Length: 403
Image 1 (cartoon, one colour):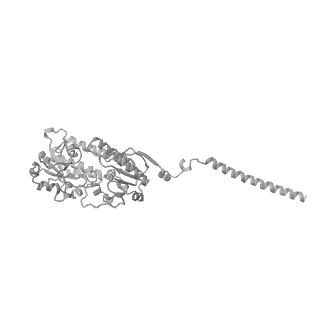
Image 2 (spheres, rainbow, N blue to C red):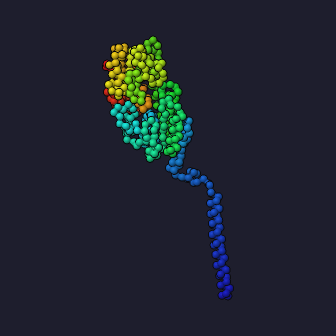
Image 3 (cartoon, rainbow, N blue to C red):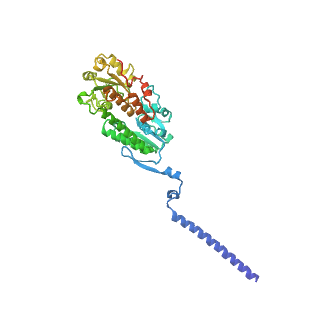
């Protein structure tokens, strides 16, 4: 009986161990099979199980930039840098200056005379980290250190798309940061106006300021239309002839520096004495100015940076110019410079109201030019900076210039 019990016990133990072994083997096989079956399956994060924060970080949208490049950007962009002349100005127009995390060298330079009204309205911009030199000469390493989510890069006015698009591709490759390239555009003709509006819209899309972009575009259009409406019915024979000299372009210039398609003249239907000298900036011969002998002369007061009063000094002291009708009749007036690191469009529009007031006072009798200028600056920049800007130029803007 004892022997039977011992054998029986041993058998029971053997069977028990065998069962345990089989169960363990079965469990391993099941896990292995499960791993094989789920290999390559969609992670839980991608099925909506991940936290909202992680999803937001990984989300992105693809846009087409101003030169036809497809660029994938974060869905919520709040850290950007701007490369190229005028690029940061557009961001300020869109009320997105708080998204800036770095600036180029011209923004950090403390100029004795500052003609960029967006800087006067936002002096804090000078304190941001450096991303490279002015006019799009970027330093990829500095940009990587700052780590923006998006880089905006604008072309020069009238520049073809190829160079800027190529530079954008190169910068994106070197930094690993999305680069959205844009034409700066202008208000000089319909093509460049469309480019300007498109760039504002694309930039607005990137930083979530689409509504503001439409407000800016509508404001510009309504302002130009108001100027046109005030003077459109003036007969050709009664339209005033005027010349603008000392026009700033990559720095200060003298009396021969002009714009044959000066927008304020176009918008108030004045006759530009220099019309026919091209469509962009032109340096004309003094003899031509004498022959034209315009009734009115406007001086871009950026000319004061030349010293000796620039174009104003020439009108005072150059014997070939002192006989001009505008000089003798004291019809010489100062306008705010607007070419400073590309075009300051708020100053262009403000100048147009002053020009209109001088040439056609009855059509602009409801306009105080300085008040209107501050309205325009406040809309674009958030602050009425006319006095600050004019003070940079000895308060000679929007005044008759004594000769």
